[in-house]
Structures are given as structure tokens and as C-alpha cells.
Image (cartoon, rainbow, N blue to C red; front, top):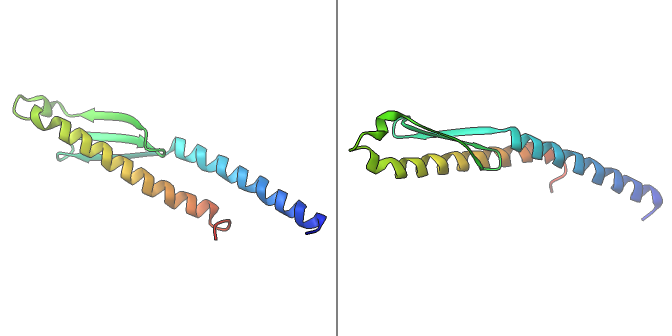
Length: 101
């Protein structure tokens, strides 16, 4: 391995670091939402699957409906997290595709 090979490898490593920074920023800026109960509960997560917002329609606060609220919340959050992970993987493959074997 010659000096040119080492310089090329170092350049590739710097490029990979830059791309990873871009991916991390994109994941932090990404917003993915999912809803359940016909839109009564909506969860929004970022690209790292962190819960950002939770919207609950006041119709769910009815005495009969309140019993299902925890299930609706859980389902909405899990759906948004699953979709965020899928989108993040797709974005990372697109941005780092040439570097992946």
C-alpha cells in the first residue's frame, strides 16, 4: 500500500464522515406521523424514532372511549416509530449507497 493509496483512503474516510453528519442532521429534522382510531390519536416522531408530538382528539375523552385511549396512543407511537425507521434506512441507503458493499 503506497502513499497515494493511504491518501485516497483518508479522503474516503473524510467523505464518509461528512455523509454521516448529513444523515444525522436529516434524521433529526425528519418528521413521520401515524394515526389510529380513525385519526383520533396522532403521533409524530423524528427520524431517530423519538416522540415529538402527540395529538388526541377530544372525542376520545368521552367516558366510554377513554378506556381505549392507552391502546390508541401506543399503536400510533409504534406506527410512527416503525415508519420513521423504514424511512431512515431508505434515506441512509440512498446517501451511503456507494460506500456500502
